Image (tube, rainbow, N blue to C red; front, top):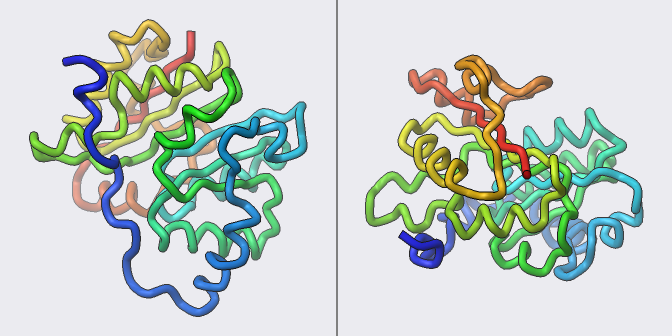
Length: 226
């Protein structure tokens, strides 16, 4: 299967859930525009900090992990992509309350943003618990594809890490197959614990906690940009 045939339709599902509270709606209307990434601009231009590392999180859900990373690493710039309005509103509330100045966001499809960014601009990329699109006819909508990996490789510096976590075994196998055949990435695992144990400083997510309660075992994959 070639790269082009693997991507059909948006990789995300709903754009909006229950009605936003007044405070959340205010943040989406007024704070989001000031934090939204401008396509075509480099992270140095977006943040005004040319000498900092920049990390990207694709599909941050409720923003727990992204906020924890921004909080723990104030010297790192973090860009988060999430089309789901309710998840975006949750992150914006934390950013506003804690005055996290090292966070910027993108609220559309990340595959529209990536081609506009300069080469080698990210030092780390997170894809955590993406929608697995489990039905066979839906799998073309999975975020991780040959095409997406090639696009990510272009915007990642040599030595940058791609971190992928999921509790869906079928999706783990899907990602491994594509990453291992990619000329751009190397899987770092040397022993089972390297994908069974969470990343150092891992704050967890609500989705992960739910998966564990329901008996699903997460895997944590790390790939290095060659």
